[in-house]
Image (cartoon, rainbow, N blue to C red; front, side):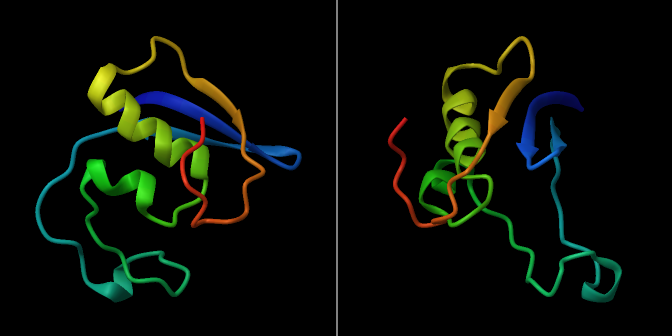
Length: 88
């Protein structure tokens, strides 16, 4: 998929890519979930879903409606309150 964002976290950065997926999730023992439970979330629900990075979850929903950026967005997300409403 195409890179849509680079999120800076301290001295390192993470890369996020646009891709399409469908179908069931694999068996829990094959997933690297850090103890969480993976679920499919509709794009329209991302702004209200407690995910990190917050700014990226808000932007993904926005880009889905308005068009994807031509170049990866550079984000330094310091929002730690995962329930914070979208204020950008």
